[in-house]
Amino acid sequence: MAHTFEDLVTLEWLAEEAHAAYIANPGGDTRAAWLAAGDAFQAAVTEHAAAEGKSRVDVEMAAKKIVRHPELAA
Image (cartoon, rainbow, N blue to C red; front, side, top):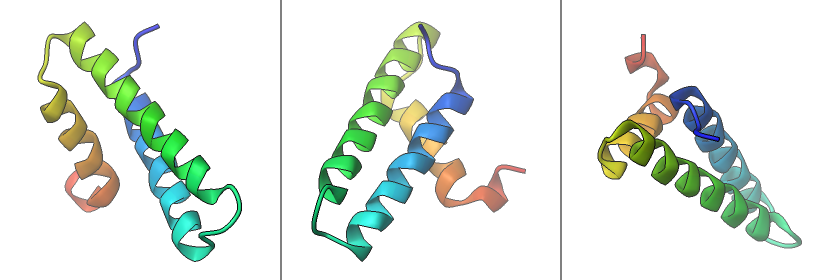
């Protein structure tokens, strides 16, 4: 199943949230959750870029831009 661009944005939000949780509490399973979320985002980016015939880097940066700078997405 190909991921939509909106899916990528959601996965990046989840990865950012998991990273924040790891920073707040580096013990326990927070690191594993952060790495798993990042891996899911990266896999989805690769799949989406291939399906759309776009550069993987361009797709990744576009999703990260929306998550990190939502004011620019409007």
